[in-house]
Image 1: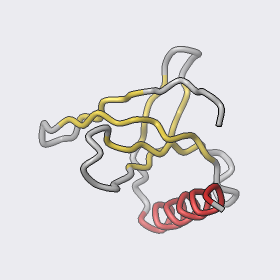
Image 2 (image 1 turned 180 degrees about the horizontal axis):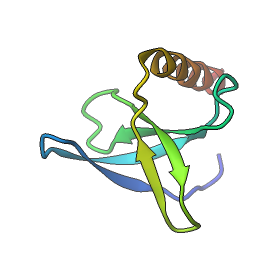
Image 3 (image 1 turned 90 degrees about the vertical axis):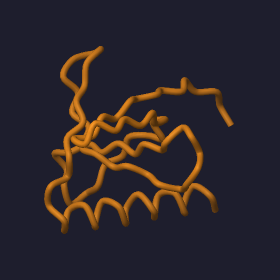
Image 4 (image 1 turned 45 degrees about the horizontal axis):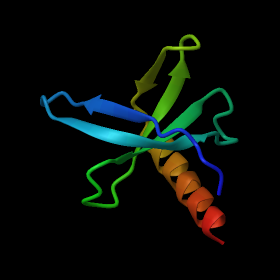
Amino acid sequence: MEDKEIVVITLEFEDGESVECEAIGLFEYDEYPERTYIALAPTDGEDDEVYIYVYHELSDDEFELLDIEDDKEFDKVSAEFERLVEESVE
């Protein structure tokens, strides 16, 4: 396994809660080719929760995370992420 830089992102929710997450990785899904998605896992390691957002790069040093507002898109992208994880384990 190759060494890779660990990227930690702090998510801030509308209720004022914040969660530090490690970026698991970026991925794409063929049905939405214009988008790149990012999977994030809380660093506290207490549960297996994964957050998935649309990743939008603004410049070399800046990006924004956008909510996936369409439930159908979210379900499909989540299933694709799970498939990629299972594929990487095999």
